[in-house]
Structure formats: structure tokens, C-alpha cells
Length: 590
Ligand code: PEP
Ligand code: MG
Image (cartoon, rainbow, N blue to C red; front, side):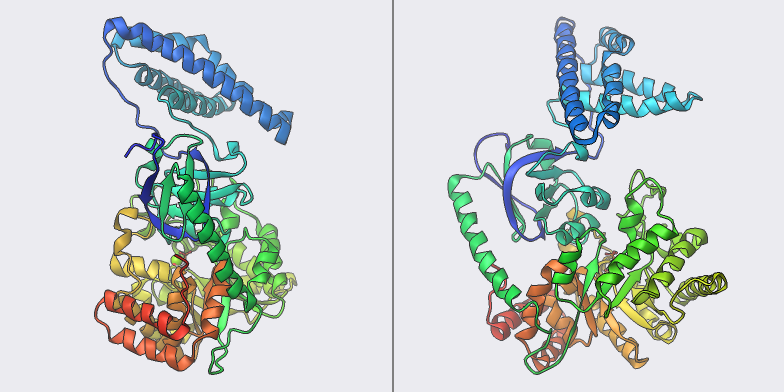
């Protein structure tokens, strides 16, 4: 494929967040560049040096432009960092050493510059002077920018991002996605990722179309190249023709009509045709605006992912800051439950500037969520206290993520009890009767759900993780995304087992993974007996529409048939037929 040609090129990825958008590409690379190394004949060495001089010149211009923009946007102080960058580019020692390196080793200029810059970075890192140590970041930033220039690639920070572009990245972290301004981003496309990676969940929550798993698009795409992103079908079209743009224009009109149909019923109860009142909750990432959350027409919050407020900064929020964040959400739902999940850092939820460092070979099986919290009771208790205090302002419930068995749950609950006693002694308002739940997302917890149900007030099944651990399919690995199969009979039987175990002890069982936000599964999960499902606000009208056009009898019948299937493909057929026959509506627009 040559994406640099002007021919239209259609690429297939994973449909991650619905919607269609087109516009110029903004390339945002996270990984280090692969630096080419090759020998250059003696007569070509001057050309290498000329390329270097040219790249230095262009990089200086680029930095001046960014400095001016930052000064205008954020002020003189913030823009000074770029003066330090210019100084690095003007450093004669660095420039001359690089040119000498070409002469002496005969290697290409990119390789030589990278070698020299790396030596500088190492030397500065070992100096016992904070100011000089900090210059390492300047050298790193500038050399990265210069290397991109030498290699004919663009390199930008997410903060350089200008208006109305399609972000094309090798990978985005949840905190990158959180930092994006949804009014500026047209769509997101990434080389890596899958439907349940957290950056994608975030993209869905801010309603930005996304396609992921494009493998190596960032190697070939050019800055400002026009891209059309079809988040329904998982297509990325480079240099879309007039015809294609026209066709997609029509698809968008159709889609808007269908969305209008859903939204007409969004304010009505989630009641089936035979009168069953079902509970729809929303998942909150913490970055959505209040309107959007309340407009979803749901009965409360089924999952407040608190990681977002922990990844925003280079320090963790204190108790007061957390209390404010939780209280804000609770105040939006004064008469409804709000389930706050304790910290689930780790896996793909880490950030390079956060105090939570994750440099593990297998982070999804590693030091994550409750494992981290139980090792850091000070951080954990600060959060529990803030949640308990928010409980005094509404109907808060608390739940623990990544519980693998009864001991972990009981240890976490003991710490909660300690916090209650402290707050009592301090005379602070809190909810002494807060409901305490366990997420069921590790197969071992599902297997001992009967024991856990004796200790918990509720269960919430996290299908995103449950599926990855049951099927041994890394949820963010695009190369095996086709093996991530919610229809696998083992997954569906396990969900049924957990629902039954919860109901035997008369505790409610909710589902909060992405499966719950897919209209194809909502009917099935309710048919299996789930008491509530929790989903991203944007899909709530569509799910409600589905519920209002089915009967519980039909949903139970569907569940019974599905649980008898021994193949995932049979289940997929049953679900598709259900939507066609029962709802008599084509939920997918194209
Ligand atoms: C899940 O695992 O299904 C879940 C809801 O939690 P998260 O996606 O945050 O891991
Ligand atoms: Mg999970």
C-alpha cells in the first residue's frame, strides 16, 4: 500500500467507536523511532551534513512557530520552555560532535546524531544538579523532533494539536484521550488497540468516532493527508474520492435519522412491551460534561471509573479533591445510586507522568487495581474516606475491582471499616451503611461467586476483563482481537453462573463491561437475569429503544437458546435473528 499516493486506499481495522468523520491527519507518535543505520560512502558525507543543516533550520522554524502559538494561548511563561529547546539546537558542541561522528564512523546522519544525543542525555542524567538534570528532557524532546525531521516524518505533542483533525497515533493512553478536546478532534485512528482498551472506551464516552488496529498506518501516512474514518464498519479511507465522501454523507444522514428515532424514546422508562421495568445505568469516566450524563436518561451510575482523576496529574489527588470529584457526580443523580469503583490503575491504565509506574512484562496480570491498593493502604484509605464522605451526599455504593477471591474482598472491606471508625471519631459526615460490592472479572472470583455472594451487597460483572482472562486473549492486542469472543459458550455460561450465585443469596447482579453497551447483548443479559446493565451514555438511547421493543419472554427465550449453543457462531446467528425478527429494525445503518 502506498498511502502517500493520491489514490483512494481503503484500510480495514477494528470498529471501536461509532460515527463517521473526515479531515486532515494529525500524527501523534508515542513509541521511539526506529533509527536507521547504514554506511555512507565518503563522497556522500557532505550531503549528510547538508541534510543535517537543513533539518536544524526547519526544526528551529517549527519550534519558533510553536513558541508563538503557546505564548498566545497560554502566555509568555509557558512558552519559555521552547527557548531552552532552541538553545539545544544552537549548541555548537552537539552539532560539531555529530558532524565529526559522520566523518569518523561513516554512518548516516540520523544514526550519528542519535548516538551523540544519547551520550549527552546519559551524561546529563548522571549530573548531581537538578537544573542540569532537567535539561535532559529538553535534549530528548529536541532530538526526537530533529530526528523526525531528518527522517521525513512529522512529530508533535498532543498539546501541539490544532483544530479539526483526525488523530492518527501508534497508540493512545487513556490519559492522552482524556486530554483531547472533543470539539477539536474529528476522529481517532490507532495502529494498536481493541474495542475494550481503555483509550477506546474513553473515545466512545466522549463520542468521537474511532478505528483501531491499523498495525502500521503511522509509518506511511503523511501529516495533513485527508482521512475518512468509518467507526461503524472499522474502515479508514485515505484520500477519499468525491464519490466516497458523497456516499458517506448519505450514510450520516441515514444514521442521524435512526439516532433521532432512538432519541425520541430516550426520556421514557426502560420498560419492555410486557411491562418489565429494567434498570439502565451509565458508566462514567469522569471527563464527560454534566449535561451529557443526565441526558442519557438512565437510573444512576453503574460504574464510576475513578482512574481518570488519578491519571490527570503527576501526583495523586488528595482526599478533598477526590471528595469533590465524587460529590459532583453524586449531585447529578440525587435520587439514584452511584456505584464508585475504587482505583483500578494498571493494565493499560498507567501514565508516564503519574506516580503509578508500570513497567511490567504482563501488566494485565500484574500489579493492578486492588493488588496495588492493598499494598498501599494509605492511598487506598484516602480514597475510601472520600467515597464514604460522598456517601453522605447521596446514594453511593462502593465496589472493588479485580477481586480474585474472598480474602482480598475481606481485607479491602476491613480497611473500609477502619475508615468508617476514623471518620466517626473525627465527627465527619459519611454513610455508615454504604453498600459494598465486588466486581466479578477474574475467573477465580466467578468460580467462588457463591462464597463471595455471602459477603457482598452486590456483584458487578466486568465482562471486558472476564473475557480476556477466560479466553487468555489480551484485551488490547489488535493481533488477536478476532479471538476476543463474548459469544464463547464458556463466557456466557460463566456470566449465567455468577448471576445465579448472586440471586441465590438475593443480591443484585449488574453488568458493566462493554458487552452491556452493545444492543445485541442487552436483551441477552437481561434475559439471563441481570438486574441492571451499565453502559456508556452515548449508547443509552439505542439500548433503551431495543428494550422498549422487546418482551421479557422473548429475551428469556433468547437466553435459553443461546445457553444451549455450543458454538460462538451459533450464538451470533441467534442474536442477529433476534434483532431482525423481534425488533423489526435494522440497528446498523449500512
Ligand atoms: C471490565 O473489566 O469489564 C470493566 C468494566 O472494567 P475496566 O474496563 O475498567 O477494566
Ligand atoms: Mg476490569
